[in-house]
Image 1 (cartoon, rainbow, N blue to C red):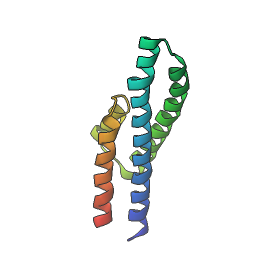
Image 2: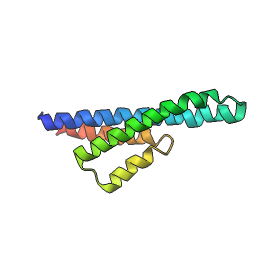
Image 3: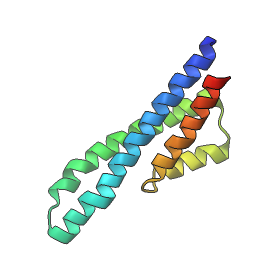
Length: 108
């Protein structure tokens, strides 16, 4: 395997991790912390999870920018991946698509 393909696979791996982290923290924030805050008056979970998700989101955007310049993704792909950061659970679908790309590089 040449160095470029190995670097591309590593970058896709980092992008997959970023996508999983962002999706997981968003899901916890939306489906656990927010209901606890509004249904049971327990805002401390949002206060704790909010900054964690913020860091995961920034990491995801940073990885997305790096990946975009490395792979030259189209505007459509770029927008899809940005949209995945705002839709709960969409990051998990995004991770599967990234895995398919990573597997395709490994097979080549």
